[in-house]
Image (cartoon, rainbow, N blue to C red):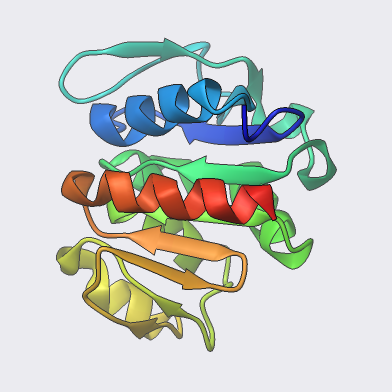
Length: 173
């Protein structure tokens, strides 16, 4: 199990993309990582689109960057809700600043923009938030996965296999 001993947070809020949550969740567990579901604190159970539920293990105000080796931020419209919670945004910023692996797929780029960590970074996202990413300082590219230091980004569910390969490689180092 290549990620034995690693601890990874997956952020969650309502309207998360079910593929972008569950695929990383189970792939990380399969690789041996301890996966912790971190919610905003607005609820215990969050509903994805379409209609799948996940229960948070903890809320963002109960954890810190030092608790984790990495973080995955799923897309859907959840990142637009997540960024309304300062502690969630702060956790993302602290993870990046601590040099931890931070991976964002699809609309999760909104969280990266709100955490103000995109200046000078090359990144990708779902095409519809390209302008948000660029305005936040990213050099946006249209590629299935982009690794810039400890930041890993992908565009959409079809990119999940490449996204997860990049995350696992980064967490192993």
